[in-house]
Length: 107
Length: 119
Image (tube, rainbow over all chains, first blue to last red; front, side, top):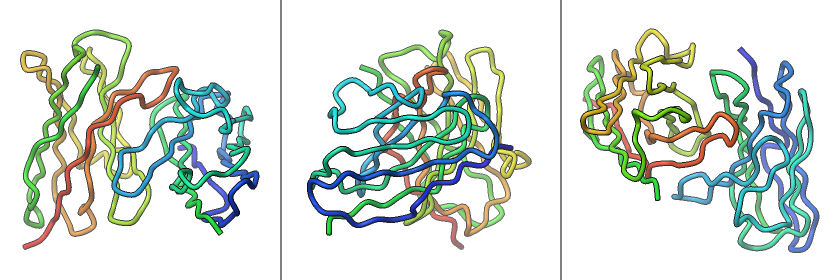
């Protein structure tokens, strides 16, 4: 099965910083990659699907890129409300595996 | 608006079988176009995909859990269910049901239900 590896596992950045999280698939998954934001005690919320399509209602400071095996989630200008754990998920075929998550904090 | 709600026991003994039900409103599980899935999250840990079912009854399970998992549909009640057998403490987690779209990924989530495996 395809494994999903996220990096870093955690990061601390200042408000206004540009933040980048990467997700690597052990085999090619085309663009079937989604990014989720999970705040403490809350249900995950999809931010981006098909690697780069912004879900309706998600702020434009979030963007995604990549195809094949390497993907990136970028927060263009980090805001206090972005403190959360971010997960990638592949869904080209089952199993729909998640990455291990990246915890984002404010410095 | 599609809503999913999990129900089931919060405490289960080791070696027993966990049974959870997800009640869906705002959408029919017997219509095509979506998968109906179960996902769990161990305390303080990441998300683990358990498996999903299509309206035809076709299923796919996480290989690491496959020998212990069964997901089924009850179209008369617009519900789908999870059974996980031979429980151990390592199965203690929040279990969530979800609706998956083949192009848009996991689009709806239940609130999740905490299951503790303990004697």
